[in-house]
Length: 173
Image 1: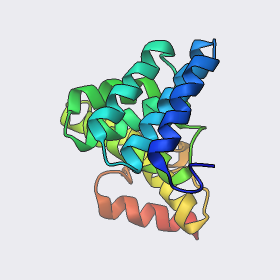
Image 2: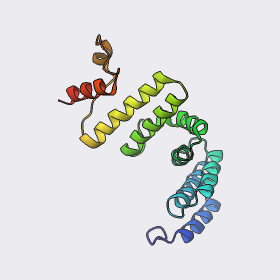
Image 3: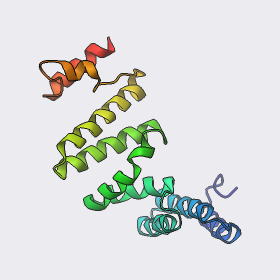
């Protein structure tokens, strides 16, 4: 009720009460993640939100909402090393979970982190996945850019952004 009425402080109090109700660590982690999301998205309290996300991950190291939110938070703060650690924990789940636009943003950010870390092959893979996801989301086209056809060409379509764009356009048509 409080969430629909946008009574965020009351919603946090209710979520705090829920922590006492749940016995399981996984359920408690979910409540903490939800509290963190309210703090971050509605009350503009990123430091408090981060503490809740970290508490959630102490209870359940695989708490997806906490991992995703904490990844975004530390990435935006420029904490590259921490963001890369979280990205590696998320990469398998992100391929099948979450909103499509969030997946494409995640793979783009992961690719940039890997590039900055000097891991160019994995960075390229991640950026290709981001591009494929974006094409699916925005153009409603499902393609695989890094397929056997691309890999068998004498001149790689991945040499430049222009050659990749041309290759993607040929696949779409």
